Image (cartoon, rainbow, N blue to C red; front, side, top):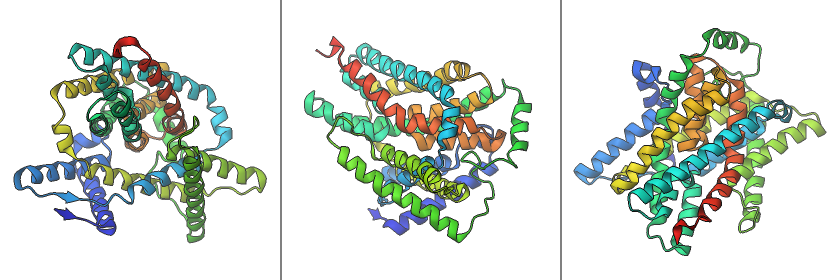
Length: 403
């Protein structure tokens, strides 16, 4: 057993990002299909560690202490960068995308339960391999897994949920780019070129992670302070809401505090958030979080999944790709923004919001920016989806098939 402490894990994550960048820049295949750099580097390292464990019984344990703060910092930057006026302007699109996302939740749970019944499994296992762990992610999966184990007597429910969420995290980062690449070929590229030309005079955003952004030490410290306040207050609110009907994941509270903080300061004292510093910190936090999460994957947990559960997840992956291409893309307008939205939907429909952002960054870095996608996806995937998913899960649990 090789145990790495916090600083050693940070070094390893940085090297994983550099490895991913090198592999993507030197591979036509990876660039063509817009596979995110953290996914490439992190998954490769996870595969190497999986091989070492199987061949030489060598295990590497990473310190996970930084993953939580990095994820929360990323969501704080999304909130701080959210302008309520812009959200109001994109309100119709946001509501339309929420309807599309709701449709996927219902489809995933229908597939999960249907496949479980067909394979002779407990329908609850089908739910765990559906919106609970895929659209819900590790946090939602672990929470419902505990409920299924304690209230329904489903053995190893939490382990199944975590393994399914891990599977989704990997596949969500792998299929988003190819789906978007397939769809981009069907839109008019002059629209993309015009967007690239306009970006010189427009504020930079998360869709341009490699753009040079001039910031100062003072602006960086101010941004860091705002993020720290968002993390502190958001965590306090989440802790107070635990166990109540208003309970929300911590990252949702942090994002919400960031929105209130940035817009409140602008409205009350006229303070304008320095977006460039916020975006730099947000992109760094996102990249490091994904690198740590993926290089720490316990792939042997996926290998130990029963074949029927793997079959359910394989069908869910195909369904996600088809839904993004033929429902998300068409309903959202069949244009370039819709293609980027489809890539993001693959990311959080199978994995998590950071995966969705990484997918969209990989696409926009190649084809051009999509401000609409980076406005809508974070708000839906980081906030509204948890509420919608909870309602859908409870409706499916109310079905008489579990008795």
